[in-house]
Amino acid sequence: MSGTALDAAFFVGWMTAAAAAIDREAERLTELDSAIGDADHGTNMQRGFAAVVKVVEAEPPATPGAVLTTAGRQLISSVGGASGPLYGTLLRRTGKTLGDAAQVSAEELRAGLRAGVEAVGQLGGSAPGDKTMLDALVPAVEALAASFEAAAAAAEEGARSTVPMLAKKGRASYLGERSIGHQDPGATSSALLFAALAEVAK
Image 1: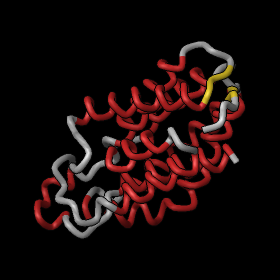
Image 2 (image 1 turned 60 degrees about the horizontal axis):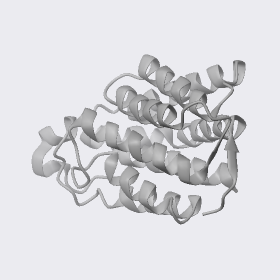
Image 3 (image 1 turned 45 degrees about the vertical axis):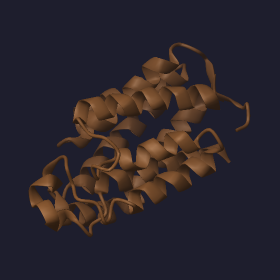
């Protein structure tokens, strides 16, 4: 992975690209969620990331960490259901781990994201294999050691790997065996987050 320094503008670009990706895929996310959830994941994520972009573009935070903590706070306050707290925790913990540095390396971002993903696991009481966003996030963070593109590919593969899984957490778990055969919406939106990261890193 290259030693490129990533500044606050890079992270604002990431949030903007993530919002655009979620906007494009909102209908699909809601469709996936209608099979095993509340049928609102797409609209909730769309609303949350639109709010994030509005805030970080109106008054761009000065550091990478501040961009992510601001984004996380915004998601927690504007996204309903479990997604707001989970995505908010991911970004806030990552941002706090990055601290006040004006620029961070890709390796520092990976360490920050690892801390963020661990916090998501603690909050949701989940682990890889439970058919949650962690099934995309954990392999993505591991693959980030190689490149941003590898992380995006690993997240996408992780999201697809949830199809045959039995849901053990969240609303989908109430369905028992009927949750098998459906891709997890949270893992799918997590893959979009990493696709957006690879896009701005090009």
